[in-house]
Length: 374
Image (cartoon, rainbow, N blue to C red):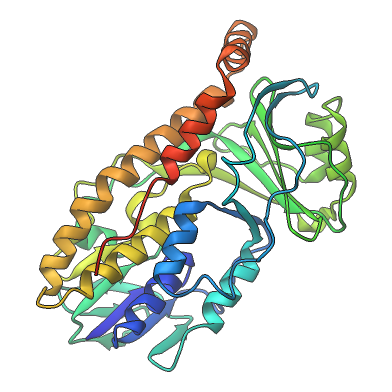
């Protein structure tokens, strides 16, 4: 089987590894000059870990020790008052990793069956081939996989492209330059802004901060974060003090403007953000991409099943689940960004009175996934 995968992010790398394991000859195209994952962190949940295991990628890309510190984890007010806490059981499978390390491990794990081409943007997508920006054609493909993110070049060849939608807020992200002693992890919520803390196995901390922002305004760097979150509970200040200002990145939070009508057409298929770009409020973007890769690999491995039949089944399995998770993530983000005092009081009071077991059950429900039988 001759396969072209457009995009060498997590979705593309996992898909390349899975299809290579089936004996496919894979060409992996990346528009950027090099394959790299950036400097932020990433949460891997039980469903993502099962997907990696199904692809044979778990060992070597995920740290053995638990990725979550034994400190309390949950949701707090800006002053540090706990609104809800997760049980240790609900977080038992959670691992926090460096995104760049994960990319590197996935790339290094590819074998000789995958040809990686960087600086190779796609200009045109046909039924059985692609044309690159430099005019080069790759023809005779049995499968074309669009793993090229929110602004996918492959998506319009598969289905109507709704484009991107801005959520109304931005996120700053970084990993601390040194280990930080914490009194708790998770997310803290204020009025129109939030701060998240996720310890890495080595004691360093991946953190993010969100704030409502006009679409065309240009956010500042760590000094703006310090100013916005001044007076929040102690762990926030400790994390910011341990951060190198040049390590801080900021980006607008965007998602697909509308759910897609299909993830597949003929021998073309979408995975990852190209199929279901979602807000990061459930930490499921990368995990869903891993599920996509594992599902596609399992379906194509079934004896006697043709490519187009496998892609139709992939669409049937993946589209409802990913779109449901995307809707929930967007809703959580909207509530988390509430600004008015009455709305914030209502949100915080509701979280305080709802039993912690409810939040545990919701987290388990999102992770309740198994790869299809091959």
